[in-house]
Amino acid sequence: MKPIYSFLLFLHMILSQAHAQVNSTQLDHNNVSAHISDAGTYFMNYVNSEPRYEVPKGSGLNAIFATQFWFAGKDSVNNIHFCQGGTSQAKDVFNGPFSGVGTYSTNDYQNAWGNSMWSLCQTDIDQYKLWWGCNNGLITTGCGSVIPPSNEALQTIFDWPAHGDVSAGQSYYLAPFFDYDSDGSYDPNQGDYPIIKGCCATYLIQNDVAQSHSYSGTDSIGIELHLMFYQYQTFDYLNDVTFIDVKAINRGSTNYPEFVHSIYVDVDLGYYADDLIGCDSSKNLMYFYNGDNNDEASFSSLGYGIDPPAIGIVGLKENMTSSSYYMNGGGNQISEKWNIMNGLQFSGDPWLDPNGNETSYLYSGNPNIPTEWCEISNGNSPGDRRGVSSLNVGQFNSGDTLFQTYAISYSRVGNNLENVQSIIDLAADLKTFYENESDIPCQNGTWNVNEIENFQLTIAPNPAINELNIESSSLLNQLEICDLSGRALATFNDIQNTHFAVDCQLFCPGNYLLKVSSEGKTVVKQVRVM
Image (spheres, rainbow, N blue to C red):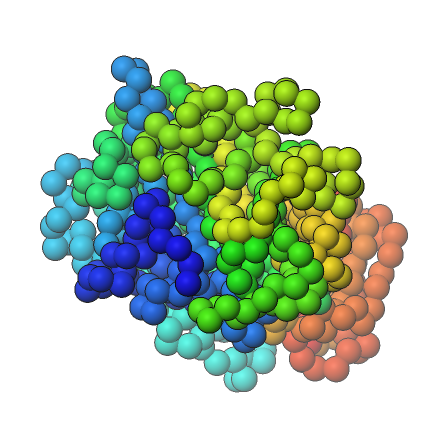
């Protein structure tokens, strides 16, 4: 059984006390089934006190025991304000946006924000757009076969937390949405709809000020926290990845001359007691792998067996400033957590590499290269591993916003060390994907890509019978017509014009994906041929 350390005391509380109300969902759109709750610790199922980051999905094998997002700032008199997340029994984060004093306990606030999680797939949004277009005369052909989204999807679309109650001290703009009529107000009846990333996503809005910090015991920071967990379903490595967008806004009145954000991960690759940790600062990567090439089962958990996988946590938007092994036997004090987040030992002393040089990146060598500094070359015994990858923000003043995106990757292409190399290589691929806004096919024909900035595209008519006309605000380089699985059916290269017509007689009636490339970037639109 996994040991109970004081900094994971929540396990004891889970097992010995009645459960507080925890809202949860399962994000399982690709090869990963990730349990997400509003307790503040992710990938932990509080109902049965078990890890729930299952990969491969359906295997019963879990790669992560628990994950938290940490925020810490020193105010002008050097006091540390800390937000560590929470559990079912003790919390530093609470549902809903930052609000006015005295509003958090009101019935209005509790009714509006008691459950601050929204889950939605892009296919639901696309279906709503099609259904709304038919109902409002924007689409006039083929509407007889168009059905509305499910009641659950409609409920989420209409309940999307686009706005807060300004009269109660909340921000007017909260969750992102497409404003069809550009009136600044979210109204799905007027064609507005949520904006998500990936094929399916779960969105959370929380704050750290509604109640006292019963988890860390410190003063609140004053942050409003927006999290989006999302996945793509593909035929490549992205099918094993979960992305997380983190947005933290300083809504309070306190300025922080020093501020740090971290992701804390307790990675149990099957059996918890035989893992190792490493990092690659050039790739913004912290990773975990098995200490040998056989992950044995225990009486409390399944093992991955021969050729166990490796798992990585990649910072995609901002560069990490430290990566540390969160060792057992310490880290109980806020000052110790502050030190580890700043790339120091619990004591405040620096980490030293084998040459005696100070470093903020612990075990930064590749274990596939015997001469490089890693846990294996250091002679460490495998065991239960936890890591903290951090971003030193610097000043975080009232009104400032912190953004970071993480990708949790998984690889099992060879032996335990070959899988480490794969994780290192995948970090570069993930960065390229993130920066280039690559087009990724999603299940049921949805591709989710960011729109090209300042790029306008007109497709008419849609649905089309004889000809599909494409007009753009910049030169079109390439067009592809794809089926709903993402397979290219027709490709038109080197167009070099702002307009192009596709002969619909080439295609059978049905739904297709139109992939438009311009100026090195790509957007994808769904089209219908009658």
